[in-house]
Amino acid sequence: MTEHVVEVRNLRKTYGDTIAVDDVSFAVEPGEIFGILGPNGAGKTTTVETLAGLRHADGGTVTVLGHDTQRDPASVKDLLGVQLQEATMHGKITVGEALRLFAGFYTRPADPDTLLELLDLTEHEHQQFARLSGGQKQRLSIALALVGNPRVAILDELTTGLDPQARRSTWDLVERVRDSGVTILLVTHFMDEAERLCDRLVVIDAGRVVARGTPGGLIADLDDDRTVVLRFGDRTAGPAREVLDRLAASHPDVTRVEDHQGAAGEVAVTGSRRVLFAVVPALAEADLVPDDVRTVTRTLEDVFLAVTGRTFTPDDAEPARATEGDRS
Ligand code: ADP
Image (cartoon, rainbow, N blue to C red; front, top):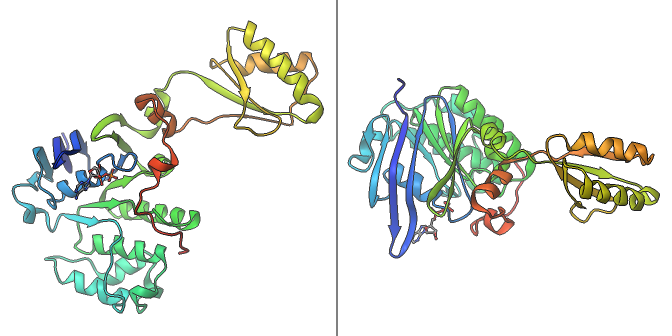
């Protein structure tokens, strides 16, 4: 059996009357990118800060490579790298100076030049912190989390506030860091980020784990409904809707026909896995050719809806501390 790199068992943490983490358990295996996914306020940051020994748990146990971080936080200093949200430092310090300064805190630090290269910061080595873009600051904060040569790195909301391009390049970097041998615990409220990066994850809501597994496994476990979206032109939209409404009333594989997200001429048809087999012959019979046909891909958002009964709203998804978009 492999040793768990991180193990959290029945973790509980309250702030006064607020139960931030109610009962959270999970284990992370070597070499994984393991996700903690959930809406704003779910208890993600509290979980990882407690895991890192930065907060005191009210119940449960947390270990990193067998070390109890609550009893002995210092024991994981060289094993665990932490990148917490919105790291900030003196505006005049340069990227290279910051890395070398932090390297001095560790017993076996990583080579700063290698880190600069790993995180695409070599050309910014002499740039001052205050002059870095949001994406560059995030890359520096990941580099600082790795400077102690840790076996595990915690990355918390690292793409909040970045534009889509900077997010995607940050994702590539996270994979590069994992490939360099570091196990990663990724905290995120972005469903797409979790789906793209995580080997396994827990979904947390209101301080509890509501789902766990691989992104693909969680999505595959959803019920078997399928939705097909069809777009029609001005002349065909009306007759097509009539045909599809009749189909929904009569065909066992078609359960629902509705306008698709208010888009003109777009109709969403939901039914069993065989729904497409019902739709295509009915339209062919009436000679109504759609301009476009696509199947709706299910995502972790559908998983969240299935386990909580709520959609993951933009309010949930956008933490109050989100910073302005910034180019990397
Ligand atoms: P997440 O990281 O998922 O957004 P947090 O762990 O930051 O969630 O917060 C979980 C809950 O605990 C929220 O209700 C939040 O308001 C509360 N909370 C977090 N930090 C503190 C604190 N220092 N004092 C009081 N309440 C806190």
